[in-house]
Length: 585
Image (cartoon, rainbow, N blue to C red):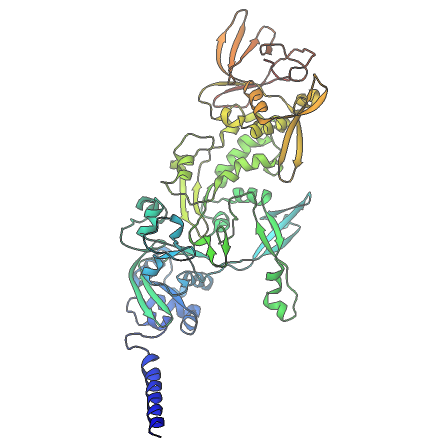
């Protein structure tokens, strides 16, 4: 009996300890997150943001979060910069987005934010860059997207103007927006500098501090029952993804023409029936639109996707990866399209930018998309802005620098076209009548050598009609939709169609590009080719040939006379003339 009494007393003591000691909130813990914000002296204006948006009732009831709260001084500066008299003057939708972007999923202390890897915690002094996660998911999520669609030739293009559309599709949004958190170890392991940070956030990066995007954390790790509050010195406006950045209209600065071109050539829609049937209206028996996944298979990333790279059950590349995008303003881009690319230039060029073949579009659009962020110290940036290459832009023309939610964005108020359009290769890339020769140049890589040549060139391309007439370069389509093909020719000796290797094509094309010119006798020019052979151009009768007379078909049996006709497009490295036959050597 005595033993029973003792055990009962012990159990009662344990219960008393559990209830009153283990589960009792410590005196120093004010409560859950909203309560914790509300008792801070310098967060009264952010407190008001939480109340007006109703988020106070969410973060003070359930869930685990980290709140990055701007000081009253930061909120006042934001109101002044955006010409608002008070918090209540901010339109509700905008206020809700701003407030949500300052709250991230899960409770993270300052130390933990700097210790996360792509799939858990980083252990020790890890030297792998992909162990240093720096992005966190906020609670801000875009609504389902609506895209106007135009159908043509079994393809669906996106159009901005709904009046010319054939309907619309609603696109599933699979992720909330992400925000970057910068700290010393992340910059060091990735070879980034404080200047790289300042390039996008317009402030000095001070080593030893942690930054929530463009805001410095002033006071960290204020504990709450369901997370942490970190006080920051700036309001962080919700970051835009690439689609939103290109859609945004600013005084004298729009990027819609570049967006329209990407919309016209790259989108692919796939039904997402799981997301469709998960819509709330379905559970109530209502009718809903089908939801679609929107993909851009030939671009480095999808314009609208907040997620980057692969995401598995325990692996999320978005935490460590980002993208990059360079785009010209409408005025700058239109100058290229109307002045060089299309028939508005005054030459027999492409009808309009919607009639371009895929390989031309890839040169114009694809190389603006990068699979990593573009900082001034990185190779992607240097290749475009600081090195001599086919596609090069001037740093002085940068008018917009933004760290977006899925890419870094650089806007240009002047556009320098790829040199394939402005060098001697311009007529071949701008005139539809040279499509076979152009594709042969791309497939063989000859266009890189020609466009990047440092010096004056003589260029002698062959038109489609001439190539077709002697069957000397036949394009064999493998998949038109995928823009895959190879080349064949009619072998005049055997009478058979034979395959052409890219190396063979490249050599033939480079023999149609002249470099050094010397004067021969009787009004003749002797021109050395990029392949190292010599062309003889007799100006007395305008005939031209290689070591041997031209023939019908490369090295054919029937000789013919080859003459030139000028292609008068301006070129920055020489002059181009049309010829009807290959030069023989």
